[in-house]
Image 1 (cartoon, rainbow, N blue to C red):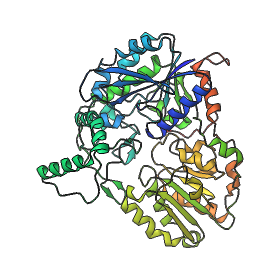
Image 2 (cartoon, rainbow, N blue to C red):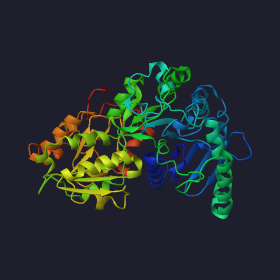
Image 3 (cartoon, rainbow, N blue to C red):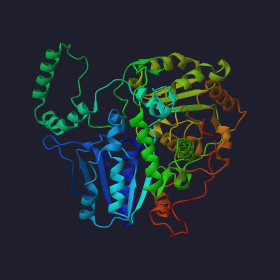
Length: 515
């Protein structure tokens, strides 16, 4: 089959978990004998020419990049341009170019809508009427300009008020025009950073003097190439409960944001043959916000960690004592502050028998790190790692017998839960997002946002009231990329297994209501 995979970044160019998935999917499809074309848009802007065009080349994949898209990506950078998404026709000419360059394409698999426009999908469908159009919902970008349905960095967005709440969700920041200019300068900056760092240093000093700014204490970065840290990685104002920004207090014009959501709901119902939610919870959240149920299915993504799961020893008891671990970010939405409150409220006789491991960068939030070290002496032992990588993961998890994954936003499918379970470690998760579906065991799910419920669950495992062995009572949903690709073929080539690819029975997953 001829399969085009879209993400706003090319495979192997970053982009967080979606970037990793896109890379793995492209490699897996290619190894399975399919022709793979990788398309990206919204990241590359020309220093000289401003017209929108398509650049193509070939290495291990056939690659295509939209230059100068009217929509910048990721979506968080397009915060003031969402009217462009529904109004611009600037990408309509790309579809016939793809047709001339690649001929028939059997499947278009979009990982998000970031960097594109609504009319692009319509024009693409017209140019490729026989193709299958698949959209994977790794996040909520189709219904949320902020992507995470996380209102003002503090609470789940339950009601966007026809777009009015969207106008108050973004803190004041650089406009998209400034961000585009930075992208245009990127090749020049990279050249001078590499070949003439002295010139860059002098330029910075001159600009600081003109602006009346003092010399920086820490080395500056002229332009950050890697977007995988997430759109909020540049925000550093914190208090004892996470980020603090000067959000707008009054409603603005919500029409562009309302039109954005409605346009994508319409596209998912009419242009896309199938919307693939990465968890049942993600599907429920999308349906609660207007998606039509008849073509929204669930397809759990594949992971390289499946191989580790096949050979792991499943932990069934606490041995000499409960050893819990949190891996990820010191962020409110990830539930880190919630975890700190729960740990602080554990009875002394329980805390004194628990070992605590945390792997999260202290630079994320100095206040959170201080709170962590303040409560650490209450525990039998404390291990801290200033972040982790896949290479250090096994070292970090040594001796751990219970992972904690406590998001308070609707985290679609946190990979850290899969990484821990793949090593035989049970995980206690919140009922927000898809982490709860790895095992779908209610004994290992607590009420999202409730520190009291979390600490009660931790205490129950520590005292033996609930055995860790119960985690393995039901099926574990960890799949290899090969298994995932076989599942995708039901939607790529409908009818091969009796499936239409448009409707499917709901899989046996967690069915907690969307609150």
